[in-house]
Length: 395
Image 1 (cartoon, rainbow, N blue to C red):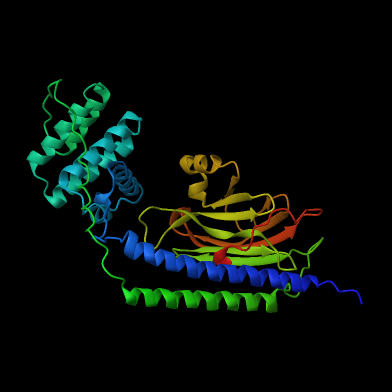
Image 2 (cartoon, rainbow, N blue to C red; image 1 turned 90 degrees about the vertical axis):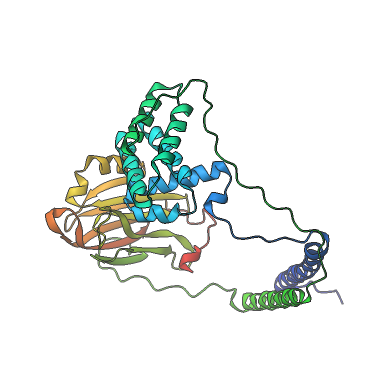
C-alpha cells in the first residue's frame, strides 16, 4: 500500500515543536556558558549608582539644556533645583550662561531673559557666592571673546546676577569643562562560583521553559480566528460604520487621553483613533485645556492625521495657529456645538461631531467637550496592506 503523506497541520506542529525545543536548548547552553564567562572569565565589578553629573561632558550638556528648556515651558524653579542638585554651583552658572548666550545669538531674546531670571532665582535660593558667580561669568566672556555679540549677551547675563563684568585679557584661555573622575579599575580575581545565583538562574530557565510550553499549548488551542463581530447599529445613510465612539472631557481630567483600536469585523487590526489633550494654559491647576487632538492612524499606509479642536481663544491665537499649520497632516477646528469634520486615509474615513461643549471664563478653556466619532471603511479599500499587529497598550 502506498505511504500516506503527513497532514499540513502535523507538519506545522512538528515545526513549532522543533523551534521551541531549539530555543529551550539554546537557553540552557547559552545560560551555562554565560554563567561561566560572567563569574570565571570576566567577573563584573559593581560600584555606586550613576547621576546626571557622572555623564560624559557632551551628555551632561544635553541634560542641562533639557532641564533649562523644561523650565521655559513650565516655569517651575523647584523642579530645576531638584534636577540640578547633583551639579556644583560653577557648572550651573556655566550651563545657564551658555544657554542664555545661545538663545540671544539666535534672536530668542524672550527665552534668554527667562534663563537669566532663572539663574537669578537659583542664585538667591542657593546663596551662590559672588566670587564664584563673577569667576564663571568671566570665563564665559573669555570663551566668547572672539564674538562681540556673544560677549554682550554674557554681559547681560552677568548683569542679571549682579556681576559687573571686567574686561578679560585676550590671551586668557577659555574655560574647559571638567571631565568626570576616572572609574576605578575592577578588582583582581573572580572568586569562586556563587552557587546561590546559579540556582536562581536555573530556576529562571525552568520558568522560561514552562512559559514557552504553555504558549505553544495556547497557540494550538486558540489559533483559530475569533468569531465575527456583530455590526454597529446604524440609522444613517449608506453602509454602517465599523466603530462608533463617544467621549466626554470635563474640567479636572488632567490626563484625558481616549484612543481606541479600529478593527475589521473579523478582528484584524486596522489602526487607531480617538481624542486627547493637546494644549493647556501653562501652570493652570486644574489643567485649563484650550486644544484637543482628534487623531486617526491608518496602518495600511502608515498615515496619522490630526484635527485640532480649539477654543475660541486658541483658534485666534497666531502662535497656536502657526504650530498647527506647521504639521501638514493637521488642521485647526473651531469648537462649536454641532460642528462636523472628517479625517480620511486610504482605507478609513472618520466623521467627527461635536455634540456638546462648555467654555470656562472668557471662552479661553473648556469646561466640557463631548465628541462622537463614526469610523467607516472606504469603498474598495485594500485592507490587506500592512502587517502591523494591535499595539501593546490596547492588548
